[in-house]
Image 1 (cartoon, rainbow, N blue to C red):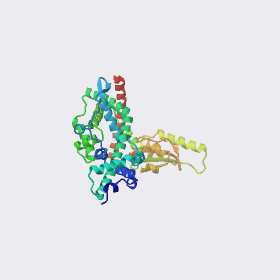
Image 2 (image 1 turned 90 degrees about the horizontal axis):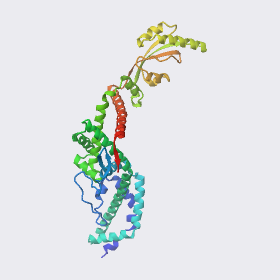
Image 3 (image 1 turned 90 degrees about the vertical axis):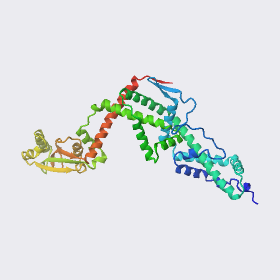
Image 4 (image 1 turned 180 degrees about the vertical axis):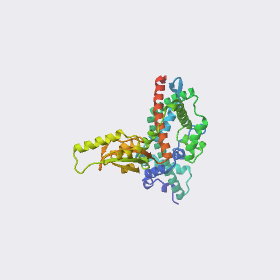
Length: 408
């Protein structure tokens, strides 16, 4: 009878492509799956520490120590650590190429470690192997779990590094949020739990989870969902503070919207200009004196201009002048620099006289049409938000200057 233990020692062919397989498994696995699976390996397993309630990440010793005081309100080391973990999850981790290189190097050390084969032999004995087929099945399981543990360990190391790099930003964010919430309380503008949970529920739904499942998922990633709630509460409250304090100060005019739409690439495709033109023709042979005389005539017409409706009469009163109602034109069909001048003009404006292909020209912008009310409404909202952002940053800076901030 064949000895199953002798037949089932780990061959190099079974381990050779382990790093690539482990990395592919890590790429394909759902976020947090490896961290949850780590610790299931019978050999060399870390026992998971008891976890707190649903959605709550474990707290380390001394986590409740006060790290910062903002107007006598504390920010704990735990809050900073949790916010740093959240920021790390948002993109402070390592690249896929870096993770792959680390996996290959780590797997090479595992393969070369003589204890790897000894652990496999112990694993077989513990499972009371009776046949070669059973030994091969356990061998496959052992290798997969080695890969899983290795990738989980690399992820933990990468996350720890990302968290460390994010602590400074986390502390700054929390100080700002503390000031925002203090101001919101003064104005009775603190967001309700219902508003915060609505945002979190929307995020959970987009990830095919309910709020409770999302909280557990985040806990598996090392982030207490309370840090997300705190962040959203501060932002919602701050928006209301800014709206109440500066809403009456932000006024967006139709001209502001026109200019914004005209200079937005996506909206320019829908923009049309309603234009009229008077042309004072030039003879075939011209010199500077002729051009100057015609420009002076055009300037006299411009001085009598009272609006787009006055242009036919003005042209009729000038020798050889030609009036054209060009209707609506796409900006791209109008030559420069006239195009840019028209796009930045107000409705009813007459441009300065210019030398065109047919003579001295006077262009008037008589109207503009954009891609409809939705385009204009979007533009207006964006302009309002930009104004609010400027005022909000100014107000936050004032709060920071007046605050008593003690970093311990």
